[in-house]
Amino acid sequence: MEDTIAAIATPLGSGGIAIIRVSGSKAIDIVNSIFEHDLNKQDSNLLELGNIINNNQIIDEVMVSVMRKPKSFTAEDVVEINCHGGIIVTNQILDLCLSKGARLAEPGEFTKRAFLNGRIKLNEAEAISDLINAANENMAKHAVSGLKGKLTNKINELRSELLNIIADIEVNIDYPEYNDLPDIENNELKTKLTKLNKGIETILINSKESSIIENGIKTILIGKPNVGKSSILNELLNEEKAIVTHIPGTTRDIVEGKIMIEGLHLNLIDTAGLRDTDNLVEELGVKKSIALLEEADLILYVLSNNESLTKEDQEILNKYQDKIITTINKTDLTNKLNKTDLKDYHVVETSTINKTGFEELKKEIVKLFNLNKINQNDTLIYLNKRQHQLLEEASQVLNSTINQTGELPVDLLAIDLKTVWEKLSSITGDIYEENLLDNLFNRFCLGK
Image (cartoon, rainbow, N blue to C red; front, side):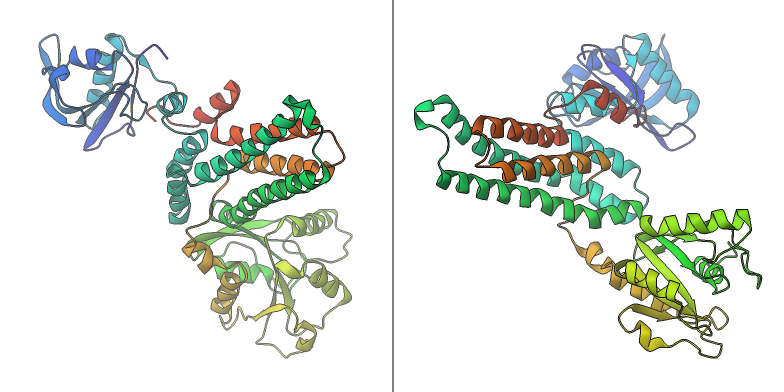
């Protein structure tokens, strides 16, 4: 990181303002060479109005800010040039910076330098990426909580507790006259490790709710042919997304759509009707429908008001009861369904003909997933896939260690606990692999 980097930090195109960011040991000298005022005399974090000049020709009137190390985003000297937005003038100023000794920054390199210089933790860098790519207000809110270090603080607490436990064990190893831990100390050790693992599991459980914010609720509409699944999908989406006919087996492949409920995405998937069929294409669709039952966060199991409950219906309702909302459709037709058989389930009645029951259906979804609670809960901690996997692995190793406490020598227990510590440290980036950094920061734009 000896060289000085530069890049355009705003979307390139016509606009009011564009920003060229320069970071590194020569940042002030490089911009000084093209700016009409002496930046060495400028106070940090103030804007200076002046002209960018090349060969005695004014390129643009700009405002320049200097942020001196270590009090900058990258913890290096940073200069930002605020010029008039436009492709030509913005590229001209960037080219001037490059001609004076800067090199073009790689994607995410400013944020990478912030991490490598100790300005932010790795999970906080990931939170920046999440904030940039947030698809709704809730995702942005949880990304901001990551930037504030909520996850960092929790992980550091766990690491500190674990380090104290490892230190206690090392005393026994370094001073053999104490022998191995006696039973009472083994019990104390098991208690401490169980408490530590509970802290990890709390974060994991907590993050399951927050993952709904990022990924939405994967919702499948499933049931026998002609119960009105496609009509319900169209009604929820408020568009004719799926083909609707009275011919059984019309839907042979999945049809998808997306709506927002309480600021969260509901990812809707209409599926082929469940029935035995000789048609190969329809049969493949039915198999795909059944496979989706396992993957779904929510199942809208659609029954027809004018058809009796079958054994197959009952089997699916029993197996997936915790994530099913039983949707009794066609309430405009004569009732032939014994609704007392459904008293133990979440039930909503709809009619796509009369346009009724759909607000009640949305309210039932909000209730089932505690969406109001999720939106108002400031204690949620969002984990991305990498962080979630590391925490799960840490918990698994810790569980194994707890089960073997008192059976294995303490030096072997210490090895496992150091593995847990390494996994926790990998979340914050206190331990990292170079290829991990490359994969992460390459997802950023050039000027970030």
